[in-house]
Length: 358
Image 1 (cartoon, rainbow, N blue to C red):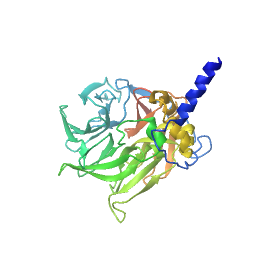
Image 2 (cartoon, rainbow, N blue to C red):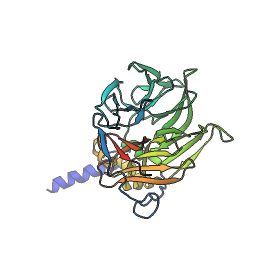
Image 3 (cartoon, rainbow, N blue to C red):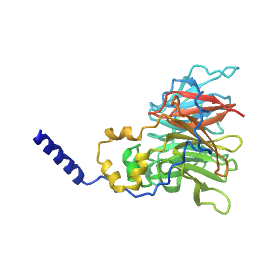
Image 4 (tube, rainbow, N blue to C red):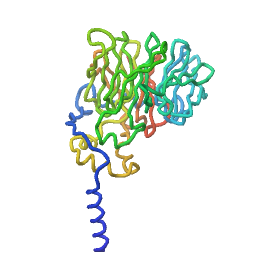
């Protein structure tokens, strides 16, 4: 027994002395908003009545609709599904529309009826109505697009999309490091050129244009904020914070017909992660552990959450499922009287929707 204890003690000492693979940056994280106190973040049951639309995509990261009102969503295995609705609005069986052989996240139709896709393994893609796939961009400035994530398309056809991180994958180590590795990119369909608009983003994620297209938003998941990049006006070419200190990790952003922004919150705040940001030694120590042991530390809480913002950046409401029938929310889309909900691996499975109350 004594020998075993000595061996364990030696192992701990060696573990502590081994240099960390990262040099974490300290961040004085703001206290997370309360979900209990009265206010726009207060917990409710608005998402708890969500009904399953289709379970064909297990992880429907993003959701979009074509001109006929058919739903399109991708899955983590590369397949993109199409779901039609009958005259009463009931969903029909999902059909496979295309297979990128990658991981399609963002999806949006352009004016020509092509489905533009950000695929985290393949880059920026265009899929024509027959399902044929073309790579629009997989490099920028001679370097790879590491993790194409989400997008929005302007009226002139310009595509704004996020390159989440030069890590090229989602890893707990990047959370612990607390350094910005993400970018906001723009693809010009006329010149077929991709440019970098904004660098130094903390896990660049969801992207959405304002209704006037005078600015574009990009979610910085690991800093709980939405950043605004100005496209027009006196602030053109500059950025500022649109919304900060969110109650969780913001994922995708969509804009409805009223100009409001809907933000999927993949998980509510993780107290241990906030503690790491305040204590770089703790973060560096945790980064020494095998990634397989850390996956549970960043798994989504079983609490569905969507945030609703005005065009001015005011939080006007939040939608919750505290019982966790829907959780790991990535996307919320306001369409035809319903709020459609998408999720990512680690969350609940399938596309859900809930009636929007007036």
